[in-house]
Image (cartoon, rainbow, N blue to C red):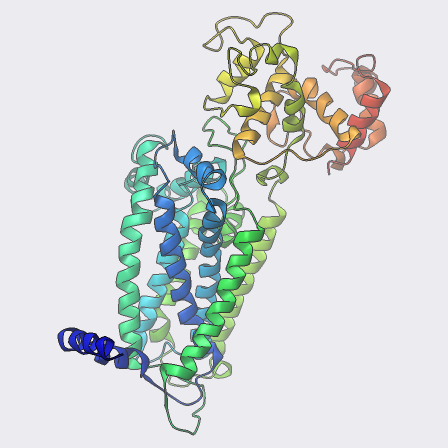
Length: 527
């Protein structure tokens, strides 16, 4: 032990580490400081997790549209504990948002923003905005459908605000979303925002130590106690519980990855993560020229009021019941956010779940085993087996190739007879995109398999279902909400018997009774 003490004495004489330790651990806390005061330490712990996992992910991530998606998949599928690592980072973002909101609620409830802690509160609000900035900038990095289209919405929102074209140009880096956009958002995520985060965390902690903890609402008799060991133990226990919960999420749930970004897919309905869903839902109530009210005015007013709160509510009384305007205002804003988030979830289409296989993707898996495909797509053949392909082409090229494999550029000639039909081509493309996501196909019963094959072989030529297929006929995604099984059977069998002006061909003699029953029951249940 003597050599260790000698080394520590030498370090202390050069660095003053013992004084630093005393300043860090021996801070005097007022009597009555309880479990509610651990929320700040939980946020620091979660930020550390994000920093460590983020650095680890940058070892594999490639910030370019050609390789970003595949590098994320590589982490998920090939890197040891890669899915777990990305799960910690992905779910950690939600944990930080929740922890930051709880911390803010605690500060507001106890009136901890009041004199002399006004600047401490302002740095805290700024940190909340930086955390949301991390969540927003990390959105685009996987370069999947959700990332691409949600970022498109974000840039369009920015374009409607003050200096909109300039800000949108900075965010996009060009005329369209592409390599420069991804590189700029990546730079913001790994360089600019971390620098801002560290600066404001240091400022926030310095101000907190300078002015001390506000303590309980009412004065509690008793001597002050040092931070260590009592309160440090509380921080450690709560931090361990939260970290264990985060570990559970990362182990049990697979972090989502949608299909690779497809700029030509105008049918994709973007949905942000839950912490931005309320703002997305708010857009629906302010259409067209009123949109800036939802995107700029309302959020701007809320953020402005947060910054000004210590000056608006400057009365020294901290009890929440004696501050009805502040307490009621925060309650109303919180309730509004919860309701809008719930309504946003209610409107989320089924195809937004990347783990869910659409009927066309299920059909495409079977159609891919057709002799016309495996003649070339087989081990040792002219092309890789279809299940092993990572489709990088756009949808138009893939559809054209499925119908006419000999033509390299789409649209040069009409597909020859005997090739795959348009519906089958749509099914193959749906299957390829689902395979690239890396989600295994589900086990389906005989009736669902038959219904999927009918939809993929015939219906998808004109109809769309779950945002896949043709677009010249009505969408079948929720047809069961408008038509019952009897009507569907009559329509599919002989459309002109139902509507003399129908343009759809009859399928009564094309489908077997088992196929007809399967597709009718399947569509009738799509509500």
